[in-house]
Length: 535
Image 1 (cartoon, rainbow, N blue to C red):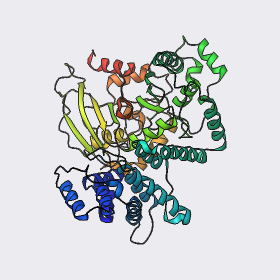
Image 2: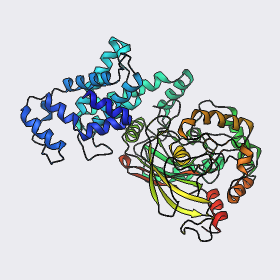
Image 3: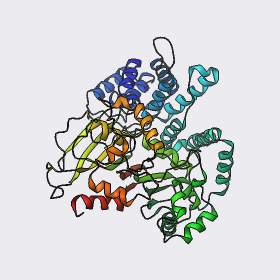
Image 4: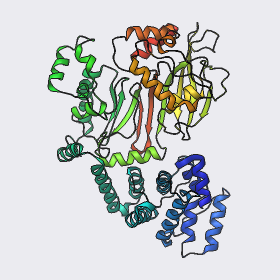
């Protein structure tokens, strides 16, 4: 078992361990191993499972298994797999493997039809972790929010374990309180006492009114690109505009919503270049809280945030409004049960200095492919499809020699930071237009601090490219942009916010029945119009 886990983790990290547990039916095998039922019968069933044959598991009493023994073997295997030959424990690897084990207890794997729930195994595993850590902190890691989320969702699938699930939720709240700073703890405590509009009796009509009112409130700060796509008692899905940060790690004066600023903004709504508009840097988190939207407190540094979009990226983002929804969302993302699709505008031909690792002969409409290259040293997989080609006489026709841009759909099968940006630049050799980090096509008005930050980040990610990046300066590269993109820069020269051509267009969360689509922002359409003359 240790060899299986070690090999799976080296190849695919947590996803690899989950796939190994599912494909080799490790949990059913262990439960049968530590069961009072016939071992020969158990062995026969497992052999059939591994051969891909149908097996009737209804006659096997899993409750007869010694779940504590199963959990003991799982934890000892995780510790052994995370320990090097020099007897050094890799705590990061141990935490990841244990979370993969919790995920395997949670039911259907994202890459398999295998579907069995093992709540008792998850509970005993958590208990053994606690006991080992209390005895010797050097031999074990503490459960994190992902651990609690996976155990919580496993327990929710067993109606008889509702009390145990609530206990896990309380532990997650205590963890959030512990990791928060003193000021944040006060804010969280006040929020838990207040909980505005969090009422089980609210009906759908009220939510419709809330959406319209909140949307208008947010648009007064950030323009028409911000929209509410979905709203319930548990979750809100927002189409975030490019330039808006999801949350602030450190809040400056520009990021605060004050009464004077609201009045100033209201009095100058007709002026697109008002001084207030220039200096405001309101985060999505603060904008929603100011609109009296209750957000989960389990992420104390970023209320309600479970996943994020970069400042320059627009599109769908889901935020948890309750702590219960937060844990369920965390589990859904970890289990790869959430589907995300992005729209990206990239050059039609590979860019010098960006030698892609994926051999792409041409970018014709309808062509598809897969990019599999690490991101920040971790396995990452994306699927792409060409939606349209721009810059030739007939939009959406086969690529011709004078094509300038391609509108790409990218579906991320893993969720790494900057995954789409890295895969476009260093997988396809076609960096996203205006990407300030992975592209030489930076805006003409980039400041020296922007360029300094870019050089620093490029040095960090230089291992992704087969050749070093171009030595062209920011201003030299910007002059090489297609005319349609340069027109955008000219129109938006007074816009202080970062933006590039990456848009989170689609978000599906089956756990909550959510399927949200976000249309391309208006400034995208204006640029596409400049490319081909018509939408």
